[in-house]
Image (tube, rainbow, N blue to C red; front, side, top):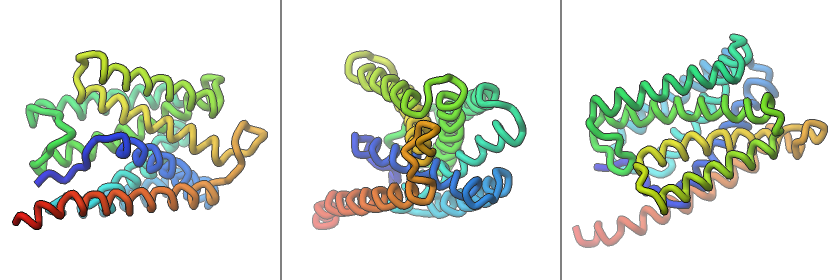
Length: 250
């Protein structure tokens, strides 16, 4: 049975909310609580593995479980990217290039192994593992790209978010007005929504002196968590209503 949500506008709204929360929550653990990038990465990767195994063991799509895994890849990706770029001293540009290479390699292995990169209907265990590892790498890459735009490009948090929003608009236009592969466009959008969330998260948390709104990591995380919970409840109710006619017929 397929365990993935339908790719709709609502999906992308939840994705942006989850990845923005991943940015603020990752920073809350590593910087505000002073746990550090290395220790935070180990903690959050452990949480990711627990949620991933739960998702792989599930027999059907559960919105709460699915979005919990998405959130865990986002938080782990935030600290993993920061560890590479800051603690190891690779820098945002070098870190981004390494992660792009890893993401392309993962997609290549997935395509060779499964003969398909479908993100609408995944039914095999191996394809689902590829799917989630690709999401982990894409969210990590998105963090590095977001930090590069916000800190190194001179655009700032708001400028970086506007640039990513423009690129996302191009991807959306390509879906409706070109014959470019929908799978390729999906992964482009998936990667781009992560730096959009990262720059949006920085905009929410950073002080006004640095161009932010100064909500802090705690306040921003609480706001975003509340919004995401409401969205998950709505998604769960919608999914249940969609299954009701099937159960009635059965």
